[in-house]
Amino acid sequence: MLHYAIVFLVIALIAGVLGFGGVAGTAAWIAKVLFVIFLILFVVSLIRRKG
Image 1 (cartoon, one colour):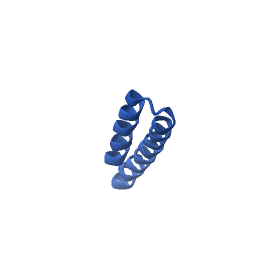
Image 2: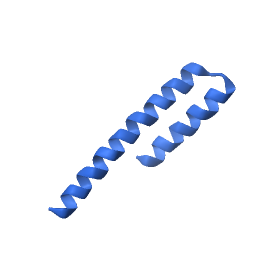
Image 3: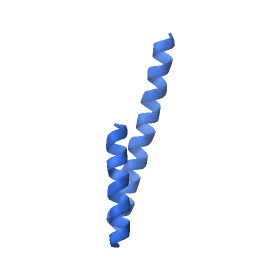
């Protein structure tokens, strides 16, 4: 999951440099969503491991 978030972040950066604002914004939004999902799953796995 974190890997895909980083991939979309790189896509957003490259698209932003090349001037594709819409693609960059969408890719950045997807990267944010995937990162938040990763964080939630990470915290849940930490809680389940202790319990």
